[in-house]
Length: 64
Image (cartoon, rainbow, N blue to C red; front, top):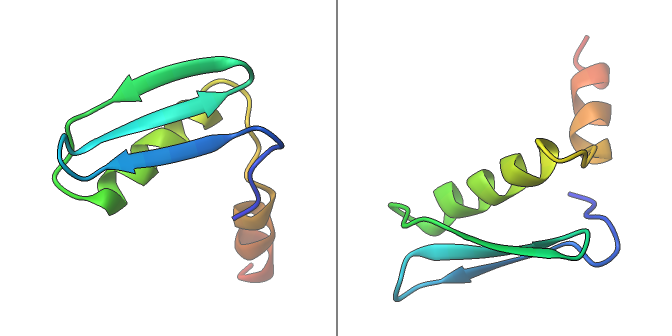
């Protein structure tokens, strides 16, 4: 997964939250059931704000 420069997702195991740093904004999301769910939510948060997951697009094109 290719993140933009400066894009960062940090999972807090104790609070079961994810801190998302994206385009000079920081947001805490959660709590979540597990790390996988938290990271998915963080990535979706970034997609909703304009991040294009180039890796995911390539994988979808190769399966069609």
